[in-house]
Image (tube, rainbow, N blue to C red; front, side, top):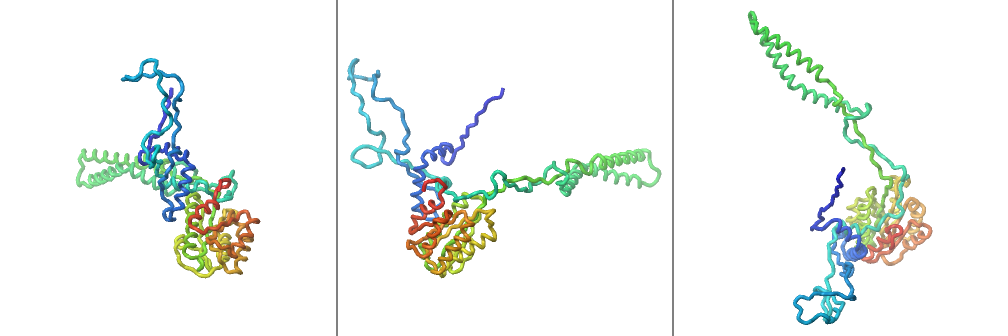
Length: 430
């Protein structure tokens, strides 16, 4: 009869903290932790974003339910050392209320307890930070019921079809096997052949003992030659090696995010800093949550250029403002490298809204006619309060294009809520 076995995972996480207990704790107090993370992010610099955090929960939120007896009913008690009461005396009920334990809050009356503080690790912090964010309208570029597969080389195997036979690898194995199995026999054969040659070279009549030795040597030599020729096969089935290939699924939901940042002269350091903070959040969010996603960085003033990640965040080049140059470059790159039938295309643009007057209308036309029809979602963030001509032109696109959104950010503290509003999951509260 088989024995029922139960395996209990008692591995510890960090400072002797159970993994299961910690996960249950995080699930139970998710709302309080989420609020604490939101407050922590608003006071951090972007370089310190991806770090852990000490979370403080009020004691009232982490109190455990307790079952206790009520004050009513008739009970019998035994009081050791009683010198005051005799049988039949009535004792007053104890007064309810009042906490127990030491207090940490200064007061002239009452008692209290310290708030509960625990450390949220880096991974836990980022998980809470991004748990309800997602790329809007992300869809599969192929049918979900028909997954794509790709064949990859996976070394060699001893079983397979003849068309996958690897001749060189098989012959190499056969040669190694023959060397290993026939090494002792070949050494003995060489020794006997050399010994027989010396016996045959002796001058004069041969002694009967020598003739006998010669016959024995010749018989052994013939036996070894037969062994090496027939007993050790040239190619054995165990030598055969076949090319092995495995099928791996190919992701059918591919996305590309275009990051467009205005670096013109009207973008002072504070505005550039807010733009960089927004794109840093976006970059961290995308690379953390999506395995198959490309990022295209575009900086623009009067001219636009595709740059590397380091140049995008740290280059100091500046100039005038022609926003349409960035939109035109984005459209050209998308057409050349990211066909809309295979890729989910997204765009995010940050600017102060100051643009050459005659160019803002062209920006609206480029978005309406060329870019938004290709995009699943396009977000525009203006890092200035004043509504200039670019904001006015973009406002005309809101009603007719549901995949277009625009927000304002005038202070670094507003970046986080605006970012969450733009990229919240469908159905999730703002």
